[in-house]
Every structure is written in C-alpha cells, then in structure tokens.
Length: 417
Ligand code: EPZ
Image (cartoon, rainbow, N blue to C red; front, side):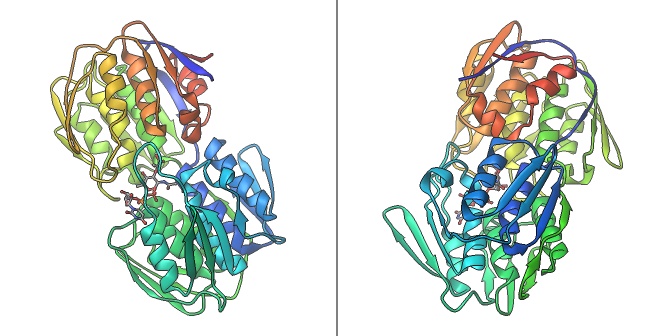
C-alpha cells in the first residue's frame, strides 16, 4: 500500500490548475446511460472514483474510453440492468446509477451501497422518490430489485433534506419519465447545476437547478452531447488550506470563485488575501493565520462539509480558537485523532469540535481513513516540523488527481513511496 512521505515547512509558490469536480463527473457519467450516441466529457478528473463509475458503465454495455482529460462514453448499446456487488462497493456514490439504470432499462438490480467511513449514508430519500415515480423496489439480502413495468412517471417530490445524491437521482430518472417532476427543497450545489446543464445539452428539460425547486419535463429520449465538467471547489479549498498553513502565495487556475463564496470569507477572516479574477484565485497567506470564528457545515450555499477536515487542519496552527459544527454527516471527525497525534489541540463534543491553535504541529506516522481526512493530513504534514508518513493514500486518490505531484510542483517536499 503506497504512502506519502512529507517534510514540512516548505513554502509553496507558483500556480496550479484545479482539476474537474469529482462530484460533478460521477452523476454526469451515470446520466450518460440515458443517451444514444457518443458523449464527450471534457475536464474529467483522473480519479479512482471516476474509474469505478466507468467500470460500471462498461459492465452495463457502454463503450468508455479516456483520452487524457476527455472521457468518451457511448451508451447506445446498454444491455444490462444489474450492477454487481463488487462494483457497487467501490464507490458510495454509485447509488446515483439506480435512477439512471431504472430509467434506461425499466429495471435495476444493485446491492445496497454500504455505509462508509463518514457515516451510515442512508438512501431512504432516493427510494421514496423513485417509488413516487412509479418504481417498485424490493430490498432483499442487501440487494435492491427495482422495476418500473409501466415506465417512470412524473411526481411532486418534497425532500425532507436537500440531499445532493437524491436530487441528482431524481433529476436523472425524471428526464425521460412520462410527465413533469417537481423537486422541492432540492440541493443547490454547483454540481447539481452542472448535471442539469449536461442533461439539457442532451435534450432534457430541467428548469431551476441551483434553486430550491427544480422542475423536470420528461422527454422521450436523450442524445449524447459534449460537456465540460466544472472545476472542483473542494480541491480548490484544499489547495488554499495548504497555502494558508505554509505562509504561501499561490495562484489557482481554472476555478470558479463564486462556487467558493462560503469558503473564501473564512480564509479572509484568518488573515489571508484572496484576489478573485474570472477563472483564477490569487491566494496570499500571512506568516501565521488567525483563527476563524465558528465554522458550521451546511447544504450549499453554506460552508461545505467536504471542506471541514482541511479547514480544521489549517485552524490547528492558527492563532486562537476555532469552533467547528459538522451538521451534515454523523461521523466526519475521524481525522481529529490523527491531527492530535501531530500535536493539534482539538476536543470534540458530539458534532462540535473545538480547535485551540498551536504554534506548530510535529511530523508523525498517520493513517487516513477517508477521502477528506486524508487531505487534512496532507495539509497538516505540510506545516509540521520534520517528516510525516501518511498511509491510506488510496483514500486521497479517490478525489485528488496527482495531488502529491501538484504540491511538489508548487515547492512542497512530498513524494509517494
Ligand atoms: C454528496 O454525497 C457528495 N458525494 C459528498 O461528497 C458530500 O459530502 C455530500 O453530497 C454533501 O454535500 C457525491 O456527490 C458523490 P447527501 P451524498 O445525500 O449525495 C443524509 C466527498 O467527500 N441522507 O447530500 O451522499 C446523509 O446521510 C463526498 O466528495 C439521508 O438521510 O450526500 C447525510 O447525512 C463525501 N437519506 C445528508 O443526508 C438519503 O436518502 C446529506 O447527504 C440521502 C442522504
């Protein structure tokens, strides 16, 4: 199992291009199942989670080829509706295939996606919504057997929580359903808008993405199209955290600053200068960052739960105390014990974490247990005294493309062993 070897305290400098968004690529790849013809998906990040989704597409009968940052997906000859357990378990987000396979094949058989490191990840909202659209779903021995004998039809769906995955699943299933589907209390993340843009470029009729209410008028069929994935706002937040803890000045290229409207103010409060141009962010950190008041994770446009771990790593060497409240997932503090091993002073009480900044962290051998936790350990190791060894790099590779190479190109002393 590969590890990352980091020697801390190097300043970063220069510019780096931010990869395409993992959480946009995954639902768009699933949605491509509904199309006939050849899709060109540009700016598609090279990630193990993306590769896992492509494996599922190939298993179902799609032709999927990658040419550098472009994924070519042809779903014309899809002939299966069952996704084997080992493929389903590779990435939790594979649940978004349920709506797509059901809409395309009229049936879907997939194993219940396991929980994961950050929580039990229920799918009740997905199941309830698809049933309201006419699906018959039976759960047996950890498998979901879904069928829509008369096809899916429109429905009025009120989400109890603006679930990103449930919103995406419904948007995809509703695109070719009979009639109109309305989603109220829909998720508003930029990745939802990106999925809507892709679906509409294929001939779907999705209105209001990014708002609380999304309306989808079902159409007969979708035709393959070309689409460029939006930049990954969480990778951008991670790179800013790396710069913030190493008193660095770096430029992020290919970003959309407005997607970071709840993250940038936190860095500014910490004393960083964040100069936003069209698709660029110039980030200048002070020698020591100040603590940020309270960071509460919320559905978009609130502070993103996916940036909580990396901001916590940054706040652990800030001057002062920062309070975190993790409102989205019930077990997303597993990086704390590893940060404490590096000298961080963090106490938790339920969903609240209190971080007392320390002068410096110390290099240690640490263990990543989830994707964003792994990123937090990289942030911490960049500013720690001495050497750190981070195992569990496979978690990092789920969401960060060639991350150690990008950091090394910016001046960090980091390599994969
Ligand atoms: C998406 O997960 C992202 N994953 C997550 O990113 C992200 O943290 C999350 O949205 C919140 O922004 C992808 O897009 C592939 P949710 P998702 O449905 O769709 C509960 C990362 O690090 N819930 O918005 O699973 C759920 O348990 C990953 O890149 C139900 O109770 O998130 C959670 O507490 C991690 N029932 C809350 O809602 C349901 O049917 C938000 O989940 C669905 C969700």
